[in-house]
Image 1 (cartoon, helix red, strand yellow):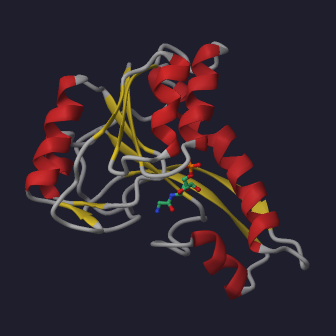
Image 2: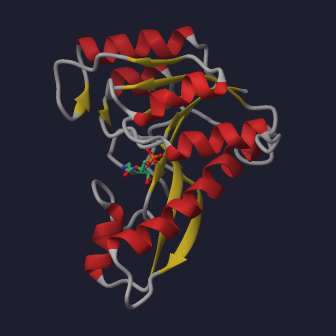
Image 3: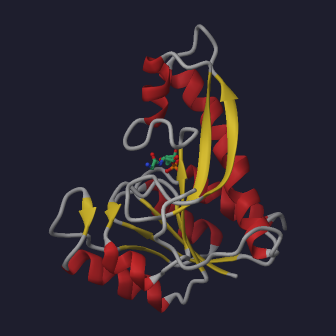
Length: 203
Ligand code: GAR
C-alpha cells in the first residue's frame, strides 16, 4: 500500500508513521511522499531524515481551503506519487470536491477529539472548555463536510480535573501517535474495511 502524507505543522504524527514503518509496525504500507502547504513546516524535515520525498506545494490563492490553482497543484503532486491511501496528518486546509474526487474513498484524516464531538479547529481546547470527562482522537474517511465521514477508529483519553491545554494535549497527541500507525497497518493488511467510494455521511 502506497501512502502519501499531507501536513501543515510539526509532523509528529507523520514521524510516528515513519517510525512505525522503520520498526516494521506498518504492515506492507510504505510512505512514498510528504507534501505540505507551509514552506517552513517541521513535517518537511522528515523527508531527508527518513529518505522520503518531501515537498512544499504552493496552495495559493486561498488561505484556509484548497481550491483552484493550489488544488490543481496538490492533485498533480499527490497523483505523481500514485497513492493507495492519502493520510491527512495535521493538514489544516478544507478539501474541496476536486481533490476529494481525485482520490475518492482513499483519504483518511486524524482529528484530536472523539468525533462527532468538537469538529473544526482546536479540538483539544474545545473539549477542555466544554468540561467533558473524556475526549480522545479519531481517524476517519474524509467527506465533503469538515471532520465528517465514516469513523474508522477512536481512542478515548480521560480528562483530569487539573488538565491544561498542554497536559491534555500531550496525552491526546500520544494517543494519536499510537492510533494512526495502527489504523494504517490494519488497513494495509486488509484487517479492516478497505477504502471505498466516499461521500455518503456516516450512519
Ligand atoms: C494533530 O493533533 C491532529 O489531530 C490535528 O493537528 C495535529 C497535527 O500535529 N489535526 C486537526 O486538528 C485537523 N482538524 P502534528 O503536525 O504534530 O502531526
